[in-house]
Image (cartoon, rainbow over the protein chains, first blue to last red):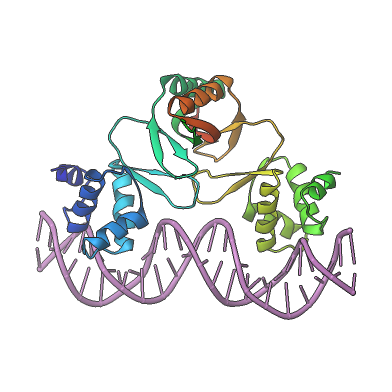
Length: 135
Length: 135
DNA sequence: CTCAGTGCAAACTATTTGCAGATTT
DNA sequence: AAATCTGCAAATAGTTTGCACTGAG
């Protein structure tokens, strides 16, 4: 029951918020489009509107429960914030998303930012790849 | 006169295309939003529509003359393709953009992709930073 | 002269917002 | 009951497209 997270964020424990949170947690996938979530809720006949899905996701993002990504393709992609930062590889053929974390890159990013007079606040790294056929 | 580039791309040498290309080359800035370009052309009374700006930029992108970036904020950002790949640091306060290139990161990206069974086709790396006050 | 290219308005896609009624506390 | 929240429809922002006309080759 992470309804605590909702309370902590000053959000009332409402049906839509709980259902969306559950969905984010109990899916095999980890990356969702607002539309995808809306469709999944439709199938469950949850009676939750698309506008609400967006509102809830935006609130979750503000509360740090969720991370919003801007991959190619126009739609925002949302993912539960599990705490451990990671970046993504996107399969350009299938759209499948793989996560990774690399300290060498993380470290280098901080150095580069500093070299240019910046304090690194955030970053976005997305690798677009094509699966290598393993015959 | 890089109208050769236009021809090479199978594009007729038209006023809009030439003007937009000039603008991309002869500006102090290097990163442009379609809207920005449209406004700059408006001031010059070039009589070029926003739709055309988008069409031309998209064609330039397909021809490899221009690169389209998806920074935060919804709008696409366009930049002349000078051949040397680079990534970007975005100043979260001012929106100013700084370019950089780092072989350590480039190299590591390829390795990571391969480790996960991918051939790296492209990537997007954006650092969001805050300028360090130099007192 | 022909066909690609253009301007304008209308269409589209993703997302946000206003408002009256429904829920949570 | 008070305040927040939600659904729906309408509004927005960015970008694309249809179509009749214009202009490059």
